[in-house]
Length: 474
Image (tube, rainbow, N blue to C red):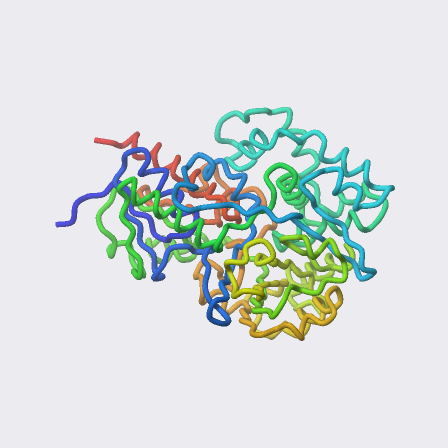
């Protein structure tokens, strides 16, 4: 008969790996099972286009990873994780050839917004500069799980951040600043009128100034591989190529932790319609490119940036988000989040060549082709881009869902940022990681604090598991 383990984890994404590591560090016996042949989840690196071109199919830029309390408490550098900081974290070019930038220095960012808004930007960020560890420690834990480290700071942040980004942006006189802030909030793929999108924009801006927007050398797979290496050294088992369909297929354990969508957990654990009210959000449409040279941006600042946002103004970005998330149609002019990692990590492509990716937003489950609209948008800001394309790998919502079962309908956030789900994920209640089954827990991005390669959902879930097992230990 198989030995009883303390914990079995299902799913080897960053959150599943983090939960496994946290529990193994506490001396528990841990076994992890992953359906794919390699660990990674949303942090993978693959040759999607041509040999020698290494792409990140999903997460690629990691401000929250570099600033994660969970990751920073682990010796991941010892296991090969190295952060590479682009010269500029982000550029937001405009059709006239200029750009707003999100730089490491607040002054450089403020100056790029123009004289009418430089002081307003400094004033917006000033209360939080130098307070990253305190603020993010409170922001990324379950809000009602103990007292915050700095209640005054968190309250001040909440009074601004709980507003929609469209409201926060009103403090700026010119659209350059409004577009920059709106593009930051767009990472949660929600209309700009959605409450708490202001907090998303503020966190991303603050991260740039405090920890940067780095990439992992060699690709995002380095993050997952470092977590897996650390877990093995702690005595944890990792089994890949094992698709779990029912709970009784797993070895006996005192607790089961799922880095899956709520839908998959309910099916596997026999919880019926436990998450019937959970909402999945709008999807991504992503293209990975192999290029013959760097992207020929008109704006010089974009040639120095790791990430580039493409939207001519805040109104254009808002329309694209509304189309995908509210109106149920693909935008004619998509807002694009793009990344050019080989400018700063040339190891990912043959000498002189580059990898580049871009994604826009479309309705959940959309089966159309946005390639033409995506490339027209890139060409607005980088004329001649198409001439450099050697190969492309296109992934609409169905393909994204095939690559990663957690991306239901192509929703890379594993849950809509809307309604009560902006604060309560996966459902309203004091224990977001527990389920109706006392031995089953959820640790994916469907739980607080939501998407991002930072491991904090796994970290928080591990605390909940530890408390339960400690209370019931024979």
